[in-house]
Amino acid sequence: MATPARKSRVFRNLNAKIAAVPMIFCSVVVFLGFSIWTVVYSFTSSKLLPKANFVGFDQYERLWSNSRWLVSIENLMVFGSLSLIFTIVMGFTLAVLMDQKIRFEDTFRTIMLYPFALSFIVTGLVWQWVLNPDFGIQGIVRGWGWESFSFDPLNNPKLVLYGLLIAGLWQGTGFVMALMLAGLRGIDEDIWKATRVDGIPTWKTYIVVIIPMMRPVFITTLVLVAAGIIKLYDLVIAQTSGGPGNASQVPAMYVYSYMFQAQNLGQGFAASTMMLLSVLIVLIPWAYLEFGGKKHG
Amino acid sequence: MADATVNGAVAGSEASPRGAKPARRLSGRNIMIYGTLIVVCLYYLLPLWVMVMTSLKGMPEVRLGNIFAPPVEMTFQPWVKAWAEACTGLNCDGLSRGFWNSVQITVPSVIVSIFVASVNGYALINWRFKGSEVFFTILIFGSFIPYQVMLYPMVVMLREMGLYGSLTGLVVVHTIFGMPILTLLFRNYFASMPEELFKAARVDGAGFWRIYFHIMLPMSLPIFVVALILQVTGIWNDFLFGVVFISKAENYPMTVQLNNIVNSVQGVKEYNVNMAATMLTGLVPLIIYFISGKLFVRGIAAGAVKG
Image (cartoon, each protein chain N blue to C red):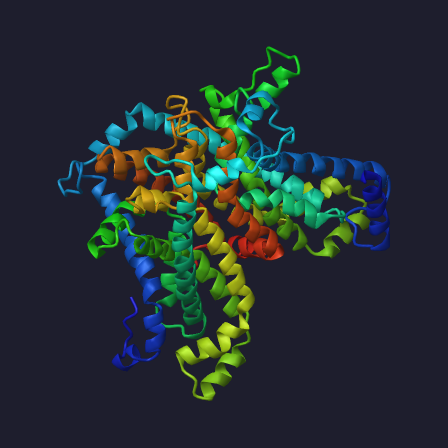
């Protein structure tokens, strides 16, 4: 804490300390305090109101035997790994294409990035309409005479995640492209000159030289995208509401419905603690790599 | 147009030596590059096109026609209906209600969060005190914590303060959760300003607030614009906090109301009205995006890469 060694120093920079009160409040009370509170109360049998009667790991046992939670986790894993791979591969490929001294770069970038300005609700609702079985893509292809054509991901439990993926990629790839492009532009022109003198083909330069050099950008992108995926909520609510059935449930929806609808707080706390845990699994190795024990870990 | 593009690009890359690759077999390569980019852009533009076209058609035409086709008979009726008549539950005064709620939420949240975070960033750089970096590190790592973990204690806190369910409560929530990214943004910007400036003002006897208002603030207007863009779009697009921290349906922000209108299970689905409503909700961030151009990119990149 900010308690200085000598008393006179408490009042030095007093204004600055007062100005920092909101930050101290946010970091200590909200981010640390609230999280710890939730973790602690996830070991209680709280129902309608938080009560401190501890029941050990009961809530977690119930959580991991709840089929809805298991489906949520599986969905998150599938959706998460696919969208990580696709956003990063597509984002990097697009950034490379954009970095070829092309004309109309600003126009292309504006088009690719505008979905990122839109909310997940808007994204989900638009794609719900485009993928509508009667009027959307499927309806049109059938209208062309291909009667047996079937493309109805949002009403098919096996395909619903791909329907979400199409919308998620539409919203987020432009952002990854912008990050990757900034990374590519940060690479020294002399590197390119050197590889050209050595006669290394462009594609090989990208794989052997550029990608390893852009490691920090890749890692940052990975962490940002992964942290975003774990929070995934609005998109699913708007596009599928978790359906058909429970086929597109995600952990954030589970937390919300147990915490604010089913009045089973303990379950909600346990589920949100699992979300916190998954973020830590992503974050701690990254913090360790990035700050190497300097600040953290 | 495609030909002109390709030729122009060839001429461009010959003129400057800063090409990624020596100019050989350029036309084939460029066709591939532009071809790919144009196909990708079609994917990006398709939903916007469909959304606008659907919203300008009458319902009979939507049922018969192709969602990609432009309207035969253009009508603005769906927009009028979405804005003024669409129903959520018992209220039938359209999305305009949500729009004004969102304005009432966004304006104070943006002002308060930017003010608090900029003062914070300034204190972190120029008025370091023991432990300030520790708090900052917690703040940055805290920004990765899923909101779900902090939602319930936040509800309890707001209820204790008598703010739960009110627009003021939501302003507090947006200010708190906007802190990490904004503080980072301002801290990094202030760190890049020459320290002599601050020292000179100190020697002249200016205090904490005087330096902030007379030197730091006027000199860092660009970063305030970046923060403004980031916050307006972020808060306007919020859904989760609106659902959790607003208890009365008539106070819901626009995104929540939109979702309730479109995904309501009652009544006949009016796709054209739904798309007009979706477009209306997306319009504010889209206008900001198209006006701000590169600053928007700078905002998200500044927040992300340096983080």
